[in-house]
Image (cartoon, rainbow over all chains, first blue to last red; front, side):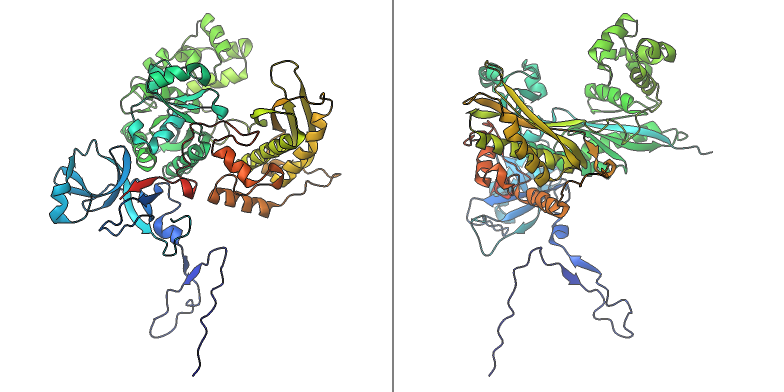
Length: 152
Length: 441
């Protein structure tokens, strides 16, 4: 029996750019351009890291939210995106930033601490859309599965 | 029939910009009085409208008004330039989606080139809508309120900005505005961009106390009694552009970086580290603006109390440079000459560097007979990238002292002997991972 040692993953810096080939499964005559690298995958691009409306916020506090956000997660926030019903948002409530579920029915707008629809009313904090301070919509969360000092 | 498009200028102007930046992550401070202090928490350099209404003066020394501010519940911040520069560049990015020609005039002002179709009857309305859209988009992206004013020239756009300040929509298009003449007749000449207080007094005595009256003065008269710079202002007020985009202020002629020491210093070693730090900061600033310096001076002073002593030493660089290592090395060589002649034991209060002969990088002249300044552009690019990524002080030249020294200063504790006092510093919310805002789950 032979065992194959896993390939060593060299620590690379600058970060690896993964080539993204577009034309791999074409049947028939191979495209002469199929050897070309169409683009590279960029996490920065995916989450819009360099867009001016993108901000980063660290989640803290309670053990877990049912939305799937854990303390220590890095939240990627779009400050310019108008929140839609059901969006996870960072809002400013009672003197601090909190992660909430944005709910809208008709003209009524409220924030729910949790995404459970049957419980939402119990927690409902109904606000006029006017005096609700929404800092941005959570577009992505980033979690390290090997928390270091930085990620707590 | 179609004509040439009319070139217009939009001015986007952040009111009390530093205060607005401090409110972004502290929305509870909206509508509350806020002031921002200069380096070393010296004096007020930005005040919100609410602070202004409480009688807080620009430039007021902090130690004199500290009690008043506390009594009136004014929130006080040390200047957080990392945050202000980041927000300013976010705004610039937004503006670039509205115009291909964006000229950043200062940290809180930018000019945009816009075009109008002079034959379309509803162009002024369209431009007013554009102005409102710019303001709205900047708010959505940054939560910084800006004023937007549109006119034919920069000087008129500046004037229109004063008009916008008084309007609820905080934006205005002066071009073809029905009340344009009335507005320019009510704008005092001293409030016109580029008219200093001395000229304003002379113009008032001359019967030209308003913008409209200055615009109406005869060219010859202005040239004879004043000068060509004021003539240019008058032409601009008439709608004739004399300050095209990208051409406005000539690059700064000099760049000064200096700071008081936390406690007076007699020892050359920490003074040398402080000077190295100033040289490095100045070099980074030059690179950011695409500039290079031809000469550098290092100076130390004992401050205003006798015995007064000021030592300085300067040298011309082989070629203009913005290279941190070259400037730090040169600055270090100037420390001993600058200290020479001081009585032993003299306690210095302040040190710094002055860079002069500042030229855009493209324009620098090589000297045929001297070896060019040794530069390491790749290293500088890496240094700037590391600074952007990990924050100021992440990578420093060893001559500045350890990164820990630098971190201590930036933390505002002022532990290092030459550290800066920044007791009210807010986090660098957008530029340092460890300082990003937190949200409770």
